[in-house]
Image (cartoon, rainbow, N blue to C red; front, side, top):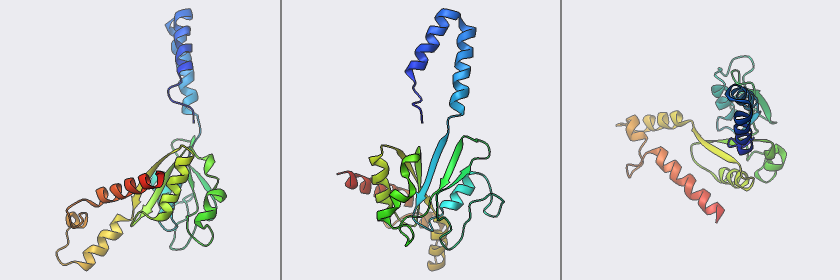
Length: 201
């Protein structure tokens, strides 16, 4: 993806303004912005099998899992190859539902080559329940390529339901705190940060 701070273009706009006036410069800026709106953006949705990647792809696109054109979801491995799903409102944005890492079909050691990570502009790593070793491997590879990534913690509702079933005095607020009173989000964030730091060193 192009650098959003394209200083060469800014110099061109300035030159156009000085040479041909504000109307011409405004037209040139408008053309440039139209081009920027049409730059393709390929987002890789990755993580372990069963973490909710396909459900995330559907939710991000604003469609139900049962709608026509939805990414298939299920209790068994449903994504066996990288599959593109264009965003309905932003046709230049494509979410790629990637196979899950760490299955017999996609072992961690072979995953990165078979999925062709280099073709994506950035990644969203879906992680259910806990941050795991395969998530660290994904982060290491993405960092090696000097690309951006975001973590999405999925299925927290399942975890809260399980806690509610196993505790008499359950409240959602208690369910989101660990024994020391730290929120589940902070615990997850701290674990992610420390694992990433240790993987870099």
